[in-house]
Image (cartoon, rainbow, N blue to C red; front, side, top):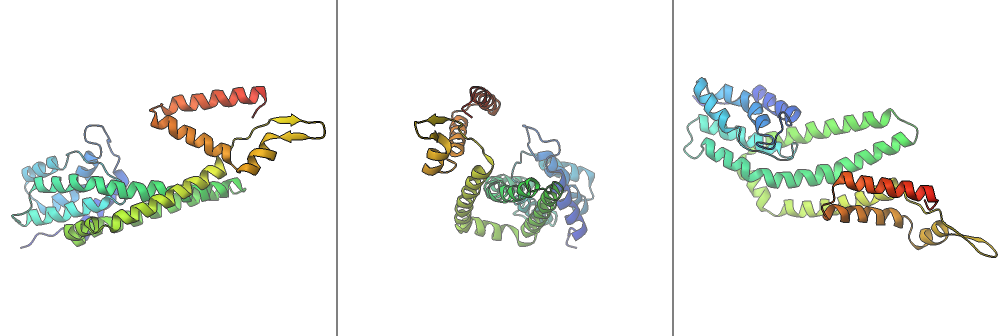
Length: 271
């Protein structure tokens, strides 16, 4: 009789992953412990021998690290491969399952990080911050919580069961087709556009330098910089911070430098 994991156990495995993917996160195995725990319902339903369960779950403890929503596809695929292994497939072994997970975690981390952190989060955070600043301090955080939860559960569920139901063939075809690469490039452009808009809206830096003439007072910020290029100082400040990061300057040190410059500039009256 063919062994099959019930939909209930698959759902339990998915929910364990999506809610506890950072459980015991560490530099040795990264998300390995969370992967192992999320696979417990699958392994328990496929194998009755305690020693066999122990052997397979020990294998699942291997190093793993990816973006959790889009990368859920890998765990769904691993669950499907565990079903094939439990049914005696000659092509599937615990080692091959580990190899597939290791091979896919990088590409899906790139996809997920680009979309989630480069596009989705900046967009909804900017909208929610705007709502809060415009006099609705409750709606902004609530909307962020709701949209973030819907995104994580919706994308994670679709991704997890795509991996389980469609298998490795569809996933590898998707990765090899070039469509993902094109999509990531387009998402990168959108992400840079969003970040540029956020810089213009939320990074504030203005000079308070007035040059008195015989007939009027010339304000360096309003009468020159804003006419030359509005928001040029926030842009230059952001590029400076980016340059410092590329030079391996620690974020804490960079914040201290900006704090000192801001305090001194305010004290002497140029900001």
